[in-house]
Image (cartoon, rainbow, N blue to C red):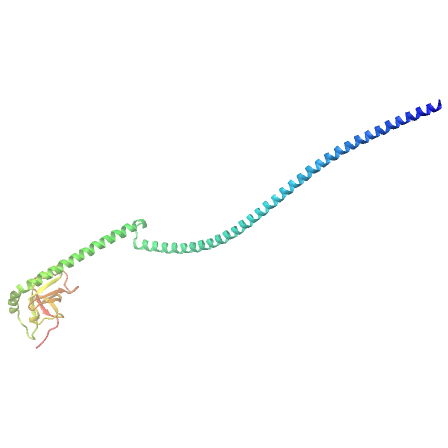
Amino acid sequence: MIKEILTYSIAIVAIAASGFFGWSAKEKYTKTTEERIILEGENKNLSLSISKKDDEKDTAIQAKDLALDEQAKAGAELESAKSKGTEQANTLDAVSGDLEAAVAEKKKIDASMEALRGKFPGIELEEVPRVVKDMEANQKKLVGEEEDASLVKKRLEEDIAKNLAESSRIVEKINQSIKRVEGNTFQATIVAVDNDWNFVVIGAGEKSGLTGDSKLLIQRDGRLLGKLLISKLEPNTAVADVEPGSLRNGVALQAGDQVILESVSSN
């Protein structure tokens, strides 16, 4: 009976022990499983963290490269800015020089304008070009008229020279009527006059003793009227210009006026 009780007790103890160990093993397995799950979660989180760190590292490397590029660009821009600054400084110096030259030129222009105002009193500077143009046109007109007048005078002299030979017989006849005074003084008669051009034709020439250097006096009724200078000399006639400023005021020369040498020659 006791034996059976012990056996039964041992069996109960064994069952209890078996149950206790089974429960302990289950609890330990459950705990281990939970710890493994937690560890896997931590590992996963750690992997994610590592991957994130790698991504952050790559981003940081890219940011660094970008920063280096930006630094290089900034350096290049700085050098370019320095170069432009130097160029602008040189340009400023050149502009300053040009400005000084322009100021000096303006002073010259102002002085010229003042001089123009003095030359054209009462005339606005805007009108000066027109006035100058009118003056130039008038000058050209006067020059043209003078040239035309000179041409007319030349033609007249040529016509007179052509007629000198024809009138030589008349001149000879007039010369024969000229009285010689004591001392062999030359005397001749003016046979033609052009008071517009201030020249005369004298009825005497080289045969009468005239030379190209002869200086003559004009007389009328014993009164001195002016002086003549020989301009063209022929054997029996001569053309002479009235010496400027020598003719008496209000006097007009005429054919028949007498001509004598300014310096009397003697035998």
